[in-house]
Figure 1 (spheres, one colour):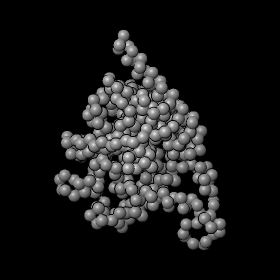
Figure 2 (tube, helix red, strand yellow; figure 1 turned 180 degrees about the horizontal axis):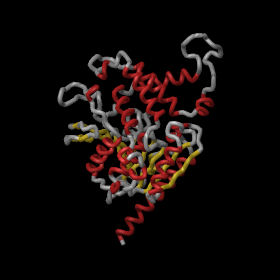
Figure 3 (spheres, helix red, strand yellow; figure 1 turned 135 degrees about the horizontal axis):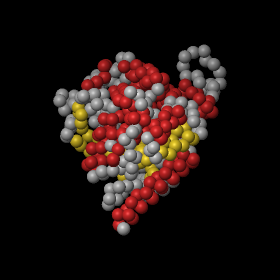
Figure 4 (cartoon, one colour; figure 1 turned 180 degrees about the vertical axis):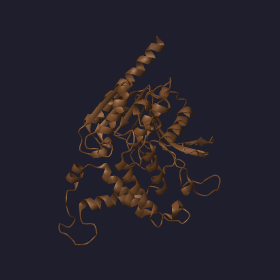
Length: 383
């Protein structure tokens, strides 16, 4: 299906300080926002889409001056697509600390007039949710028809159901987890160390030195990208193919997979901010809503009111199906309404971004049910 077409981001400026989970606060900040579709009179058809690590508010469509820059979930959001903008008003918000327009480490600290750099406060998933709630307030949205996200975005959707149980009717959590595994935390630390030890990082204040820790960012992305793919997917795409067909007996790029990873790393280092990478991976590490309940996820989810759709993918070893099942069990323990699908797809963690008809049809069917629920609610009010 065609894209929604040309879209225009908006800047939402906030002067009231936002108290963060760390005890720090940030004031006089901005959030980049994109919206798609039309908000109905009752303001009841809004869906918030939360983004993952290297994505942004640009969920769907393209910019007039960048026709090839499609939104990161363009196959999911738009007219006639699973999240149909003919029916829903969809909102994408770039998180605090990101590098795509929302206030982050590269922006000027009002207190000093210089870039925040390493002084930008550590943010959590819960902090992002509180910031997103302010955007909803600004738009007059008291309750979302759904909050949705994949990966880190799914963590935000789950946090919404806990922090604001009255403000969402449905929670759609895709390829996500209630907390990172030890292995995932380890991968994140290796990636951070690559950045922190890059000589061009300068303790996070590389802006003042007019440098970019590209090597660190490159390695961080290469490590991360490996975890997004499955072994079968990598084997099918690259195998043990050699670029020249013969061993070179050196340490340059010989295997096709090496070439691919270095290309991804180089590309990433040209557009992503190193401090942002550190912040977002820490937010991933810290997310653990059961921690306040002695590790009991059922207790953490005891007061949620939303209905849930959870989707996992069999070859996703970063956020495996077992982790989604933990959420499902906790919801069932609380007699919450939950639907769960485990899709046999070869693409690893990245499957949530791919064109899998079973997956997209499932999400489409779920949103059709949400739309019918909304329409019935309107009909009841009219009656």
